Length: 315
Figure 1 (cartoon, rainbow, N blue to C red):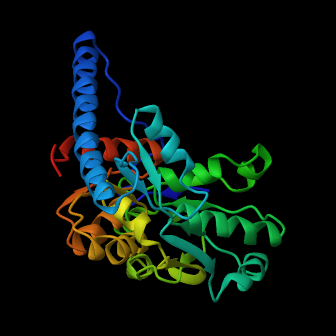
Figure 2: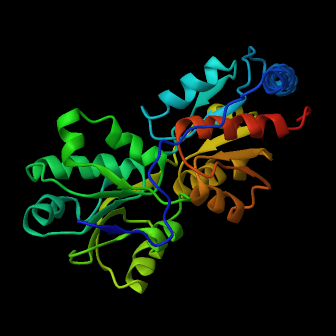
């Protein structure tokens, strides 16, 4: 069976560029030292402000974080570990929570009873929810297209036998719905049907783009992402001292603005996992927004580092 690509790039592992010469290594080392000094300056400034506020309130002191991780509880570990290895202090403040969507229960039956040319998955959470329904359907062999490296990683970590049944066969040249819908290949002899298990809050850009190319899209809203609104004031004040917030979804951006930014004088930077979150951050009014071209933990960490490097030395 032949796959025709409409401007798509070949599927290759996504990696950050590394230095390839002595001079590049020396430059990287110099940048690392400069970055560490910068972090110390930013941390000292943030901590000084925190200590001053604590002193006014008659309390003790606690080091202010450099970064706030906002994913759902239990899903910030990889980012926090990677940043801690770089000497970056991180505060976990889960600002989103996931729940079943209106179509969660339908997914196993749809997978058992219908045939699709592609299954399109656009986030790690969508991948996790999809896998639950796929296993309930008896683990049928399917062809996957994913939006980027972060989503692909969920499937690459499966046991070998499941990877054979769920091969990731397409990743667009840029990790956005626009590029995915424009570049996904047509399958010779295929039925042009696409299954899109999505967040109930996801936009319709992907299915509209696919439909414009003649694909027949079945969208199932298999989960929903909600903001966490109940956070104590001490936690909010401490989070507001961080010069960088790390966000992985538009919902997390909205929650941060509502829970923290609107109640404090926070005016820091957003380090986003990808373009969709970055666009939401800009729309929310955040002036300094950093995001990689290809979502993934390594590239997200790089964006956090870039945001810290650009942070003002004084709060």
